[in-house]
Image (cartoon, rainbow, N blue to C red; front, side, top):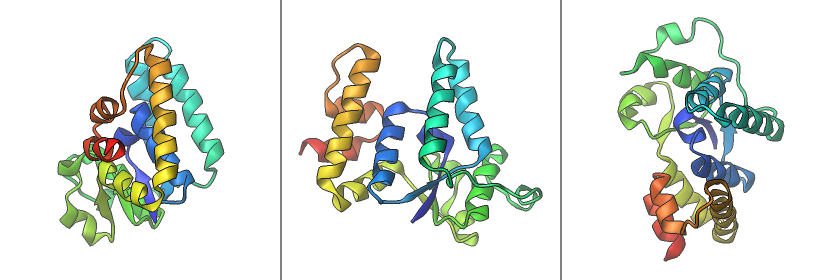
Length: 180
């Protein structure tokens, strides 16, 4: 399954780590546009400090790991599209341009299923996608989740437990399933 990752699922470190881990396991093929990566960079830059530099490095790592994931969007495609938030049209355009099956996003209200279906695209919540990944490869996803937890502990300087970290990452069902 080919899926465009919206900025809102790339910018949180834990969610991105889990999604890219699921992609490495073959659950889906990740896709994005240059503009999506740019939004991630600018969101990180607004937080100041080393966030922008870290985002730039992480973007480079993703581009290197998935060289075919960045899709070009032809000029004019966005002009024929409409979504509740015009600032999100570029994400749908990337999905259409890449012949993606869907868009992974937290923004349900900005990507109405009926509008997406007209373009042959589905909307997928990251929590649901990760639950499917856990069903696909339970051991692999548990290892990925443990690595994400260790990285969160390292970066934050605190001692997270799995379920609270997943809840903070807006992945409550996935977190509950990991500790069950």
